[in-house]
Length: 117
Image (cartoon, rainbow, N blue to C red):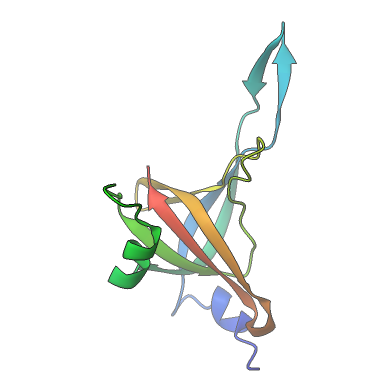
């Protein structure tokens, strides 16, 4: 395998974005209150998702917002259905919710799909 991790920080191939991570919360008089998100400056290669990827994520009869594809050296969280909040990507003034994170760690990166909020 070719290790491409150096490209994940090369400004010729990457763009800056913010990774917004929500970590837990606390009970306030019996009601859950989400903790403030943490904004982490990141770099990665960002492109619109291919039409095939958009169809793969689109449920029957559902209209999707814009989907982007991000290659990053950092793993990102998706919703686990048990309370874990998905990470968000803030890029070019828009917020995208991480919907899939695929490990390509042998090559030095993660392939992430995120949809506009």
